[in-house]
Length: 279
Length: 227
Image 1 (cartoon, helix red, strand yellow):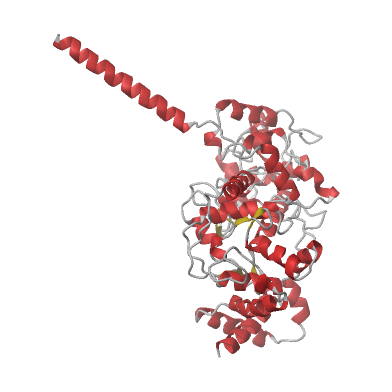
Image 2: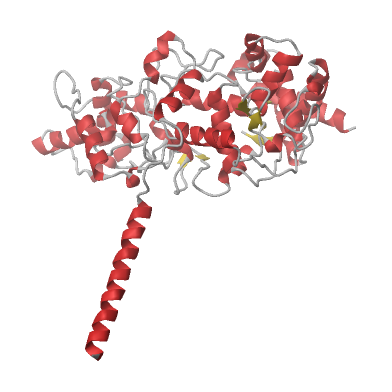
């Protein structure tokens, strides 16, 4: 029953989310009347008010995808195929890979190992819905959603005592404060400082105000109404980096892992509660 | 005897206070322990960003960026570092071909309103190469009633507050004021070292004429900013 409800919400959400983007307006313009449009958006809002998050659809998608890509062999740190609570102890050091990895990087590594993908294929798989603003269902997003939701209720517990992890944490912190590019931005431009500030109408979280980093990362993947799909952490890095006028972010790079280690390290103790929902 | 004891007591007290203050000063400025080397950080950064040759220039830090990256905020910078950044930033500010003048505020408004310019990703959502703007409303409140950010100062009635009127519009004092504001927009670090505000003119995001127009939008008595 819930599945049907979620599917209904997703369809409404996808249409509404798609409608809200200018690209989709052109596609749908001749097909749905304004009254129908309004009805869908209202239905969507009603579903949201009832506490149903369309992002949860991706849980089912991920469950199937994990079987399809043999990721039941993937060891996220608690043993092969052990997913309950695994995301909460990431990023961590993996001896078999010889490096620290966050959830997404580890999934990418497992896809190469158990699904026979090359690195390029993994990147393509990761980015399949990037840049789209409606009606896009990504198996990768599903996998990340499923694996994160299996840690719902678990407190983030990055092991900062491990020397590899500690070094990555420091690396992430240094990157966070590195001014770069033609707009002189770094992560701290927006996400640091004691004073509460807004960018346009959006309140910014700060790494310097306790608990806020946790509040930000513990709800990822975050379902975004304007795109009708969830946003994973690496997609969020890519979008932040695009807004910072830096060259394009490469998913699953050490840069991503460093940022994850820093932010999830700051978030230690926060309960994971995915998916979040945002504009 | 009693006097001597009191004096010794006072001396010990003062010595203790001085030592405590010195210790506090030491703790306030801890030695910069680099757990990771600067070169390693740049290596990780560059390896995580596209190596598209068109954008290679974007990952070259200039000296001022290098200095600013070492401190989380201006408040924690030693005076020598602050002075160095100001010196580097004031060194080369380009003015329009005709010198300082009150630009076209209508053109300036377009640039202030535009959030576009410089954003590129191969997966989409990219600005056109010809797009440009300051995205000023991201950080500033500027015109009355228009939503804006609070990261930078409120610029509402900026020209009025600088005391620029129709009568003194062409006076030498006004020209100096235009120049001061121009310097800030061209290279904000010349006035506010390591500011969050991009150095629009220095990096070539906006031309000297663009900046003159933006300054006019902020300062001209006819501009909506000052109404």
